[in-house]
Image (cartoon, rainbow over all chains, first blue to last red):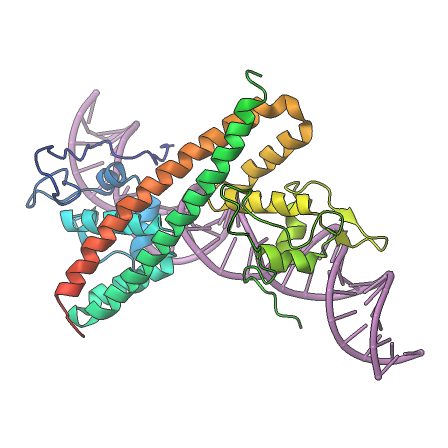
Length: 154
Length: 154
DNA sequence: GGCTTGCTTGGAGTGCACTCCAACCTCATA
DNA sequence: TATGAGGTTGGAGTGCACTCCAAGCAAGCC
């Protein structure tokens, strides 16, 4: 029985330090050699194979290429998309909304405005979320300093 | 059939502007008159009555006082606790961990160190979360400005 | 007294986002 | 040729955090 790994990247992104405001993440292999197996994508994204297949089933992934034996072969574009999706996920955006965005992408350029609106409202949510968290941080700090004052050691 | 309200405070916190680093939230009524019904607490906290009762069942609430007919009467202390719990919740802390913290509180002063540790590690999580969100914000901004450049109107 | 409103309970149900299962296939190595 | 590792599928199962239900009680008003 294989233990399902959820740990982040094993293949390291290898971002050169000299590129300053460069596109955020490099790919493990250059374009042309980008036919990753599902387990390579697992290692790179930190998602499980289950989740990757499930994303595809629900329409959150554009169609992934297949090998002659029917196995998935992910491209650098797919990796970029997964990176973006992962970012959206951790804003707390529901999967259904991300599927909606994926549909807009599939529908082509005439959905630019709607896509932008969706991202703009997500942006607002993220800002709110950050504000809430900073608020929480203040509360935590007050409590922590209370506990630090009292019970000095145990 | 009564519609269950999830909207925030109807009774406004009314924080006076002159107190600078004052305790964060005021109570709807002063100590001594703080025997709130469940629906008042719903209005003040934005939690549902279901959730309030459920919190109590799972041990996330210290024992709430009761009226002579057995109805819950929440105190200002209870409101403070709920405010804190709500803050913890939106850091993404699992309810089980908050129950653990509540247990520590019930156990008394000798758990100060453990409580502090728990809060310190939560604090770390919150900082990480903020960093992630700021990262996401950058990604969103890049995408948004792309969509703003193309498709100027529609 | 009858009605409405608001509260009580234990237990069952819901929705989301995975997560796992069983049965099967393909390929590389011993 | 056997074995093991890694892949495939549809569908069922899981865990979390609520969320709802049915039946009942208590108080206030017409």
